[in-house]
Image (tube, rainbow, N blue to C red):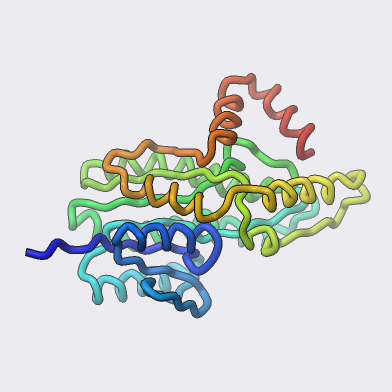
Length: 265
């Protein structure tokens, strides 16, 4: 009897880390659907159109997949974007949009797949977080907050669904060379009042991103974690960033935060 192919859906799968992860999963023999807001086509990948910030669209996309495949084994939540600017000068609407996509987009897709995975008695969910979660970045406070929310939510959810054979884990990339940098929604309003520190901080971050890891390497790592039988709650990509996260755990909070302030503040 022919074995069924594992079926995966990757949000934000038409570009950046999401596309790299989708390709890596395809290379491992999975049937891979990529979800994005805009049209997308690549051989060996199936496309679904939806905005992760729209709960109804997420549900409809998952239902479309299930009608075609009758199973769904893996969800990788990659969709996200970044904003930057000082808290004092960031409009609340922009902050809410950041959370709606990065955090609630992950929530929407996860809630859409959970009923099927629970009834199926198995499933894997991988949420893309960021090293910016433990390393709270000045002038990217809402991005850090959205990723920190993903980490805490992932750990809590993992305990809720473990009895149903479902695993949930978060993966924290560091700097990756992708279009994420160019897509960041930046505002330097108030830069003069803050002594030019807003622009300098974001410039430093963008320089690091463009010198960062090849997205294909990050995608391969995500695929590897996604296929683990018993994943840990959180993984960090790259030895450098693993060391950073460990250091942030070991140092007193006041000291680690001052160090981050010196680098990015």
